[in-house]
Image (cartoon, rainbow, N blue to C red; front, top):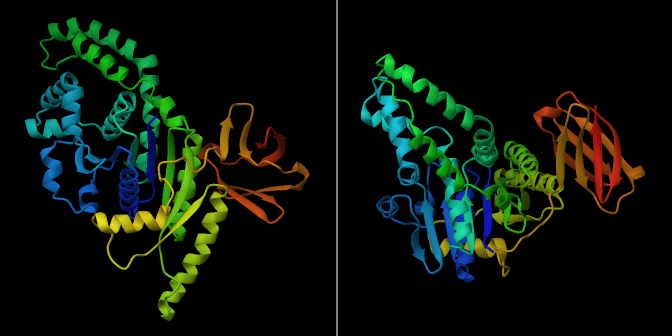
Length: 394
């Protein structure tokens, strides 16, 4: 059964470097490994110190760069033409009726979110074909990664609630448009049939992403206040979507050997933030990576980083299996369920601080960033069942 690893974090924290080092480490361990970039600003070729032209020539398909290692920088336009050609051509022709030139129309035919759709299409295909042992995803910055996770449910809703109605309305509108001699092209049955075939290729991907034995997320962060806050929000959203975060990587920490007072002040600040990170994400394991003396580019440097991160262990194994908390909200109630085994409810303290719920047991304290849907709600009581603490809000 293939493993799927998401590497997620704020832009500039080092996701590409960490995901590349992990992929190279997996390949060295004998796993057939694919490293795929989901970021429109691809930089995998740069991380491996490869000629970018190598990727361009392959038109967004996987390229073998070493034994057991392939990298893929998605070309959205080529992928859409390969999998959705009739629809792409229709949208392009529709854009041209507004007076746009052909080149501009082709560019605008790639709607926002298509990168995410294409990425899911590839992932599901590779998984179903058992094409690789490990699929590692170098994700776009956090916000876009969260949009990526919403695509399966959005597509499912569209096909169940809108598609048939839309198809019927266009069928009724065709004679009217034709009688008015309008130059606006309406989609024919072949377009809707193409959409159905396209959607079939996504079936099952939702279950794959939510299976912790298959898919886990690894958050990459820096020991800086703004980055830590975004990592907390990302952690909360991934939990909402039902994905398991199995590791947090704190990148670019200053070494203990710094003696300059200026750098020592930065090191002390990093140390404080690192302790916060460990506290926030416990029991998810946290890994620390030093700031290397040289830029991490090429196989030699990636080998060094992979060794520092994983030691002798296999990067492909699941490092943590449980979703730490879940959210639920209906018209009648709202609650957060936290996995907290071996505690007595009488020893638990709860309070809310701005956008966070803070749970305290003796010297242990957990900060949970709450969704916007919980705005204005306050924790009123707690229940405990099957190792989960349920905090109810009103």
